[in-house]
Amino acid sequence: MAYFLQQLINGLTLGSIYGLIAIGYTMVYGIIGMINFAHGEIYMIGAFISVITFLVLGELGISYIPLALVVVLLCTMVLTGVWGWTVERIAYRPLRGSFRLAPLISAIGMSIALQNGVQVSQGARVKPIQPIIQGGLTLFHQGDFDVVVSYLQIFILVLTVALMIGFTWLITRTSLGRQQRACEQDRTMAGLVGVNVDRTISMTFVMGAVLASVAGLMVTLQYGVIDFYIGFLAGMKAFTAAVLGGIGSLPGAMLGGLLIGLIESFWSAYFTIEYKDVATFGILVLVLIFRPTGLLGKPEVEKV
Amino acid sequence: MLEVRGVHTFYGQIEALKGIDVTVNEGEIVTLIGSNGAGKTTLLMTICGSPRAAKGTITFEGRDITRMPTHHLVGTGIAQSPEGRRIFPRMTVYENLQMGALRTDPKYFKQDLDMVYSLFPRLQERQEQRGGTLSGGEQQMLAIGRALMSRPRLLLLDEPSLGLAPMVVRQIFDVIKEINRRDKMTVFLVEQNAFHALKLAHRAYVMVNGVITLQGSGQELLANPEIRAAYLEGGSH
Ligand SMILES: Nc1ncnc2c1ncn2[C@@H]1O[C@H](COP(=O)(O)OP(=O)(O)O)[C@@H](O)[C@H]1O
Ligand SMILES: [Mg+2]
Image: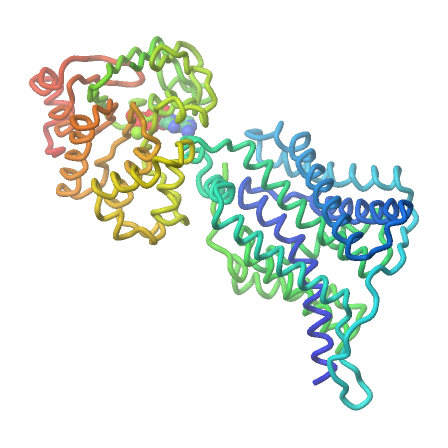
């Protein structure tokens, strides 16, 4: 029981990170019907920006942790958001209205370019960073096993919940959110009522990038090391999460992320850690056989 | 008020509009009739810049809008209830109306909402329902209501009667007449249901294969034997 609970906590934490990345895939797919293969790299860039900001703050002698966290969070979100915006402007917008595969190919190119760009500018070695949030709470003991939730896990879970509340409010209650949904449901009609469709698509990339950047920050804090290649596997997992939850569905992306986090952590705990990715993708295949639109997905809508 | 001069529009190689001239004066209801595929929808969409006219000019209240970005158009005072209604299906009725008011000063919102609800009380009853779950008639009411929320001076209506029961059609045409009389709203109405449209209209145009072939007052066209044969006989009312 205690062991189970510990895996639940670990799985939810990991799942939060996947879920935050998955939202970017699902939103971009929802609005322009394209898988943004460069999204994993945006997350990787977010992680790098967070590391760099931590190092800069360290140089400046700012050692009060809560302040440092807030500054790093804001810098990471803003700077990665700008990256998301830029990628859309230079790699996808010029191809809008072109044949269907063009933006996809451009996305793959963008992904390689960003990876290699970071490799060249930051070096290929892993970037370590000192642990920032240490310690934890022991929830209870059972026999000789302690169920521990680290302060870092609490930070990740609370931040994820806060972001989800803010994001849900943005999408369901604000004019920007309505414009975003309008473009997703009928782009031509959105234009007729006065929505600036291009700007709204840009904003969608920015929102996805901002959420992914927070995931990047979380991974930096969690593992303490990052490299230019982390975007690939995390991107694959998050994309899987988006498909599992039902691509195009925002709650689905978060649900898919949590499920994949849980599957991974339970599989690693009870079976073998080597095959956790096989388990993840195996379950994706099973779900898609029985529910081709994913868990919360709506029937396929063709975007033109 | 609206002047379309020598407009050509293409879909790839296909020329859907072949030099259209249409004028709509302030305060009028002008109708455009024509059979399926004539290019009526293309003309209304071209006025809104989607697709864009390849040749010719479109002016509204003296201002050249031929190249204006589509999303700026609603700000000039033109609103469209498009073919097929194009309700945002996963938004509530209320949210759809909010979308209509996107580019309008928020201080008018409450008053405009009340006005739309008084024209179409059904929409108020369905306020929290998703657009996609409404009946065809309710969706049409919502499409017109959404257009009215932008306080247009020119209302473009594309086949508002399509697929609706006669009673609903009458209700919708009554509303069109009322907003024209009471609010002095100018209306450009595209219809295949020629009988109702010609009765309502001050002036009318007939389009065949991307060309305007006839124009005149609604009464004249109603009496025209060619029109009767082509668009009225066969019980389109
Ligand atoms: N999106 C489109 N792509 C290609 N051809 C189109 C498109 N929309 C309409 N057309 C063609 O343009 C012509 C005019 O269509 P339309 O304006 O819809 O006519 P109407 O509204 O009078 O029925 C038709 O021949 C139609 O097939
Ligand atoms: Mg039509």
